[in-house]
Length: 358
Image (cartoon, rainbow, N blue to C red; front, side):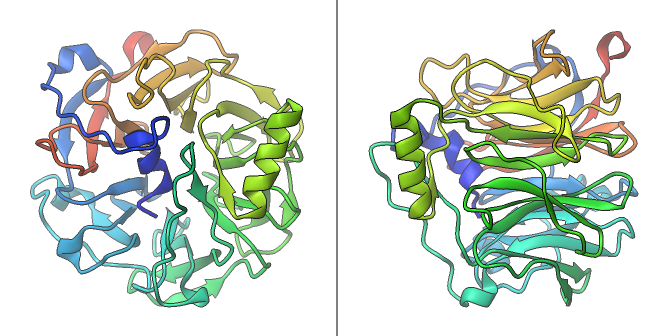
């Protein structure tokens, strides 16, 4: 999608689009990030995730210059993109429907992604805004695997309803994804070939955006947890219409079987897009908890026990989707920095500077 997550950063709490171009700041204020390079230029580009060999990124984009009007999946060769942020990239998805959440398979020759194309060629329409910002969870999403020429080689899910947000374990043996097949938006896992699909979370609320720890033993994810009678009523009402209101989310971890569920953040507002630091001891994520306006999203680091919160980015009002390269040397993220007052969200990579050997 362009993506529902990008739209959080644009006007989640006010119900209208806010575009602000802030002055550039020196990289010294973002001391974890060295040699920041912009690698796309135009449209909404997000959810860029590294191949296992550190050479490629799969990502979604609606860049009209590439002939798409709705989010599609692309494959980027990083060493070329750092030299030319305007270069086109091979499209992996069908070009039909809407896609989201791509991820390289362990062989580096196939990419997993979710698509609505079996439900129709047209791009599904986003939900109309209510008094709060809403995401659509389209019931035509299923998860597919395609080769680097865009040929679909396997369909991994075929249950009625929403199946999306798939990512692959660093161990190459498991996939985690979000599904509403149980009646709620929960995390599920499956073997790398799509077999042995199991539900791993069971709490009422939207569990999504999950990633594995470096050792493949744990999951980190964002979750909403309605607790009051009114919150539960509102959540269930929206979900019955294929909608969620993502204004309150916190970061959680659990074992891959769902045991030892722990809430890591207690910050309020929207905390999301978590990813494990290569050490497995910290989590990087995006949050607007410091914002008085609601739409200022920055990247933060936190220890896996919920201590030691540290702000990573300071520039622009939109920084999200951080992912470390498998070798731990680089980080990729989405940002609206350097967009010259447009609505564009682009991809950036940087050398990661581990201060104090974190």
